[in-house]
Image (cartoon, rainbow, N blue to C red):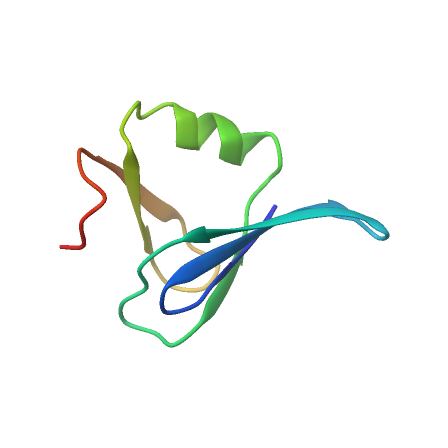
Length: 78
């Protein structure tokens, strides 16, 4: 799965070659103008749903490093 973040949204893409699904969702990006990250397709959905909160904060560390995820009770930006 590939996540293309921009200032106010994230484009989520999954698939390969001609068989790709995509959906743009609201997001807030701070610290960069745009960034693209990829996660294993089996890992990301499980990680996102495990928090049980309406919003999730993803802190991207350095290239090749882990992404830290934190559940949030509100969709507001902090």
